[in-house]
Length: 145
Image (spheres, helix red, strand yellow):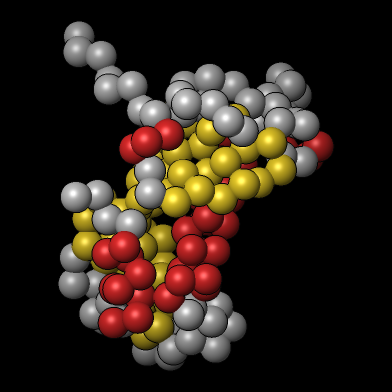
């Protein structure tokens, strides 16, 4: 069996610090698996808001999540401070694939990593559209080369 490549901080283009919350822990004393998807969504949308001018309330074009996955490497728990690493792996006509890593603050090795795919949709018509130029420019800035 081949070993998965060790994922490190240098594999991501931008980072967002986040605080874990008491409610993030599950009965086993670590961050519950579903919470990681919230971290993913928060980091991606924060990037689009800050770098592509996405107005989550009024933009006619928005990104819908059509696929996500997460691989867990090492546990985290409240009150850990974490950093979410983000990059773009693939840009299509109407979709983008993000790679996301969750790191304990200052750690070089990832604690969890996954993939998050947005399809851009005309909110009113609920149909996929080409990625808007302002978003495309922002996505290319964090694309894996």
